[in-house]
Image 1 (cartoon, rainbow, N blue to C red):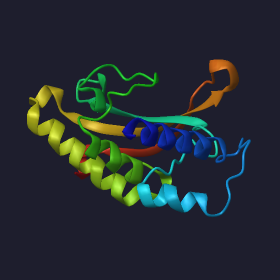
Image 2 (tube, helix red, strand yellow):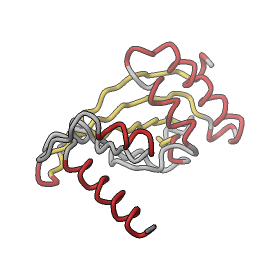
Image 3 (cartoon, rainbow, N blue to C red):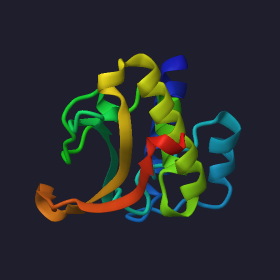
Length: 165
């Protein structure tokens, strides 16, 4: 008896999936969806709806040191690279912060971040390795068909002198 109930519910979920979405082949009567909502069997298949992301975005924060050397402050002092990476931020909170602040319409908040980045770096390094200037670049790369890769568009959001910090 239990097996028949489970088989019936699986069949219901299968019909639900075939009757929903942009490629729906079936149509359910108006009463049937209420059963799915009641039993929490309703399905939504739109994680990339209406389409997958069309761009990849990342940031490069290049800090110029007193001795003239240029480092990427987001990648713990590595050489600045315009290649995409998933390892920009130490945790998801910093990633979320940059999703909001790292846009041209939030330059005041980005200046606040630049002051913080200068203070934080200089606090942890000796006088010879102090950051005197930093530049925040926003890179946007278009997603092309057939796994193609476009050249990233580089948008310089902010140039900041650490003397102002």
